[in-house]
Amino acid sequence: METFFKYHGLGNDFVVIDRRATGVDIDADVARRWCDRHFGIGADGVLAVLPEPGVAGRMVVHNADGSVAEMCGNGLRCVAKYLAERDPSRPRELQVATGAGTLSCELGWADDRVEAISIAMGPARLQDTCLPTSAPHLKQPVAGVIGTAVSMGNPHFVLFDRPVADAARLGPALELDPTFPQRTNVEFVEPRAEGGLRVVVWERGVGLTLACGTGACASVAAWALDGRAPFDTWVPVELPGGLLAIRVAKDLSQVWLRGPAQFVFAGQAS
Image 1: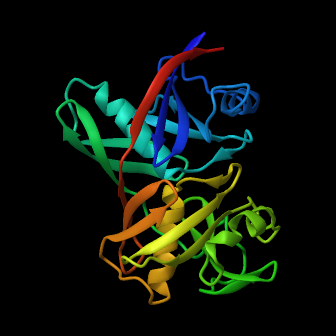
Image 2 (image 1 turned 180 degrees about the vertical axis):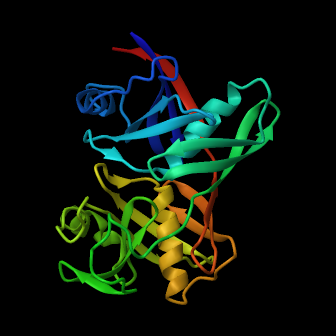
Image 3 (image 1 turned 30 degrees about the vertical axis):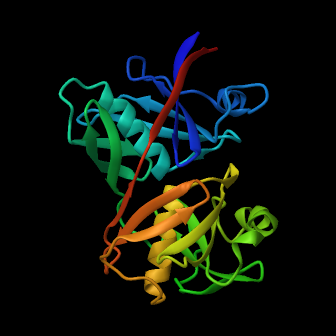
């Protein structure tokens, strides 16, 4: 039996396991079994925390279907909260290694709890090995749908002019379109009446999800490039699970994400 910790970031929920002592990751079968909402613990993914020299740890993201994702913004906030609240020094900043590089997490404390986390997510890219190999275009067709391909270390296809209600209908085929060599996350984006964006994400390896941090980052980057959102300003992003704030540097060299993470419960699993 092994102790696990259940967390969520705006309803995007994860099983967190601490394997820093052994350095042994889980396999796809374990990820699928633990994520099963009827016969397992139930989660969108499993976050394995492994040892990494010079930083607090390395996060490996296992999706509910057993695949491994390069990065997860909501998941990283959960891991940062887990690590920080077990550190007696009460750090204000943590470095965590991910498949998208080592990322810096700034921690906002309230008494003995981390209430908010800001993450420097790295650059937004229009060309990357996980994106279509053609030259970048702000609007390009994939399976007859026009969108913008953006990498946040993982692939995203941001749709401007499709209603968010289309996510469940169009998301599955777009995720698997061979234009994206490693499949893709798909963002359905529309303006928010109160300012900012409303985003629904079909997440690669998961399906419809209540929140996606990298998807929110990719959406704001794409909208800013299209002149619909400001650069270098915190932009509110409403996801089904709640609000994130995203800021994109004008040269795309850095994207910042700010939002909460919540501990749910701990248990034992085999």
